[in-house]
Amino acid sequence: MKPLVLDSSMTNMSGTFYPTGHVFALFPDEDCVRQADTHLQNAGHSGTTAYAGPDVILQDIVHTLGNADAPLPSVGAEGDMVRRIADLAGKGHHGLLIAMGDKDEIENVVAAITPEGAVAAFYYRTFIIEDLVTPPLTPPVAAVDDSPQ
Image 1 (cartoon, helix red, strand yellow):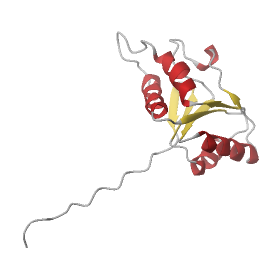
Image 2 (cartoon, helix red, strand yellow):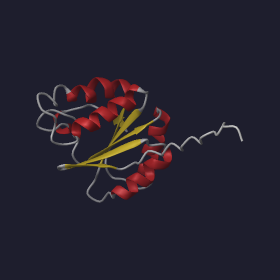
Image 3 (cartoon, helix red, strand yellow):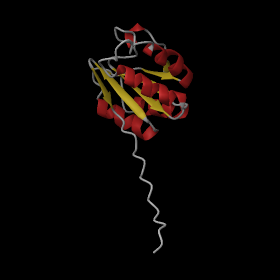
Image 4 (cartoon, helix red, strand yellow):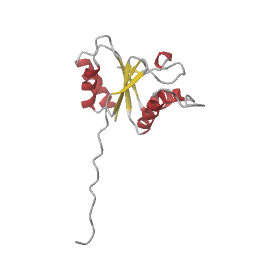
């Protein structure tokens, strides 16, 4: 796993983060990222991986949003994804950029990163961003009936 270095191949024509052919996953801490990377490699994943700490995400990836939504909102979801990534990085989450090799299956990637604590993962394909990890639902709080019986 190498450090993430953002370049123009990871952005769309407007300059917003859109690493086509990659999965960008977010984890609660660096240890979870390293475990996910090890799990991917042990599962035979052929694509490269890159680590992004919260500071790199906030300085480099979030910066690509710029004024992509001005004067009109983006037609695609890339701006929304960058805002979700920014929110998680602002809470201390770390990122793993996973290149998808020709023979890599997305199901295997999801199976490798989910048990390692992935809280979000986005598969950037041409014209489509697939949300791969569904966050757990917060259980509803039971109502307390304090009315006299």
